[in-house]
Image (cartoon, rainbow, N blue to C red; front, side, top):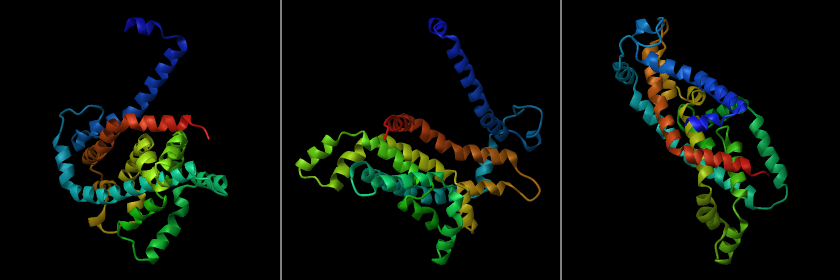
Length: 282
């Protein structure tokens, strides 16, 4: 250990210090959230960072204070089809751009990339009016259907990420499959999709994070408390005159846990999908 530390030059030590300082800046709010979730209401704005007595019951109280499991079910009802739709349509579009040659392909791809520059708020009002005209507001469908048409704001980025990865897959595999009698659809399902596992998992994680933490979409389309998601449920801890900070932070930690667990489980594929796609130029 000491030998490896001696091999560090000045620039590496400087980079290490910057990384440590950056990590500390990122971790302080998280540690403050954990600390607050274990305090009594009187201690929340006290001088001590650590709770005098760790109140673990704040977590069970937070679950009982709101219909936590109903909101969890609503979130999953939205999350599962959105993940399926986003990954499937993203992979299918990426396959088309990576393997098919047609007139205007580059122009169409540039237009697709240009849509990444548009903030999601630009299409918010027309999309809301569209779903209101067909009577789908206060239902989960306005939050689910856009995923099957490349929506959710990150559609273009997902297509770009998967397309870059697919361009690195040798075309000889396609030609061998054609010789064996496979058609385009069979090549996509049996060859391209399985080989693109890393970027597909990365897109799945992005989608999970986007839906799990989405506050704006459910706030606009859902009116009744019975259809609220977990992100909206956190707002219930805010009263007219005060906020139950300790229980709000406990509920926040509980909601953060699935996303953290998913990231740590799939981080290998996540990093692999991002790094390999970024390394392939074109």
